[in-house]
Image (cartoon, rainbow, N blue to C red; front, side, top):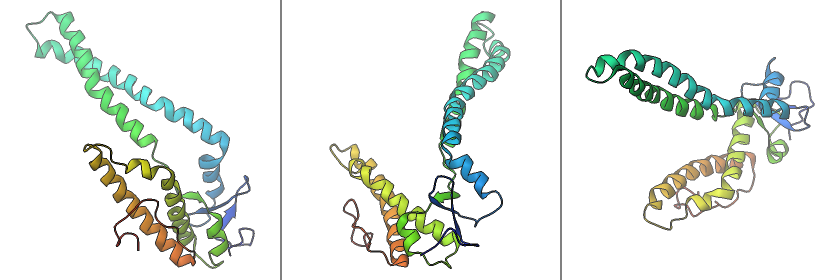
Length: 206
């Protein structure tokens, strides 16, 4: 068992009372990072900011692309009325920059920073006090990831029509990787592993 209250422990007890681990071992900025990632006020503030980023990218993309379109479109469309060409340039130029920028920003904004994560109770109880922060982080993420997959993986792999086959195959492959990591973590900790949430090939479930 690991005791987060012992000096030099590889984990720490956060202000919310839960035990966390910093993947790179406790550092001077660990608590600051925890507050930014897990404090409820900081999480709500970040969610508001993240929600506005795609819209901001769309606006900036249209402004820059539209400005370029106003200049370039009349040169590319000399036969058109200049005002019409400029309007077309704003629409096309803005769209070319704005839409990809919006999707890029939206994709990046949802990527989680997982350096500091919650340590599940079973890891707190089973991990030896001398375990490294990196090992505890690996066990914690493996167990948490498999638990997070269980409620939805059955729906993701349910095939009702032929077009569902590719989606189901991707979901099964992803869950297979997650389950392998989970079983490895459970074995290292001496935990009895849960059966997989869906049927997996025999070699994947071992």
